[in-house]
Image (cartoon, rainbow, N blue to C red; front, side):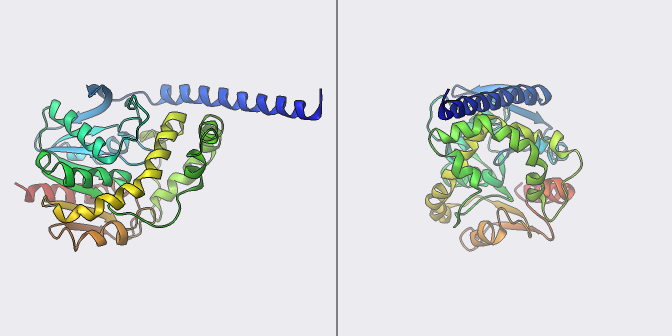
Length: 314
């Protein structure tokens, strides 16, 4: 056996071993974090959702690398005391089915699908709340489907475009061949090691609450298909927002912006303050000394902001 053939045999063995490790890891993650809600099929896509409470409707839409337990572990129980609340896994995340084709499921398509699901569940013209990436879903709904919603809530939400690169994993994950190979060999093993540190960056300057990783089922994001969908969502969002944001002057619906003053991932100056001159009816709840996850660190304040906003719509 030559040196080269020995090297490639070893490399192949390592790759196969890592793929097996990832496959077992995916099985274990789904065993540890099974669905906690119910399922509804809309436009051929099976969606996982949790519904609770009575009253005016609110849809909760999670951000990147996340799932509906982002809300069941934070604001949903409190909001359900005064509202009919629906939290859903976006298509391809949590336990919701991914779209059948390979086309990008953009924020407007997500908004349309989740509003159809909400209507089928008996909640029409809801408020739509989007955290982080899903701020784009809120803004898309306000621009494209204003007659189907009562208003929007940006919770540390993306509302504008930005300059500069994303995390290096998005660059690698987007490459042909290399991206899927990376997803199936290294994302789960390496991600498991750095997950706690990476999530702490989301909370900074706050401290991640004890038990958060388990309660929010954060590790489901390490599954290969979920990682690859998140890569696509993140890499295509900036260009989408460049097209969407010039249409904000059409928005007439009420908008609430809840944002941490010290959010370094989705900074307020770019995704909140810059919206105000265009959407003049927008209201702001700016939280001092707070990072990107105020629904976990200032749950009572966030719920109060939402309830006060919703009461003002009656």
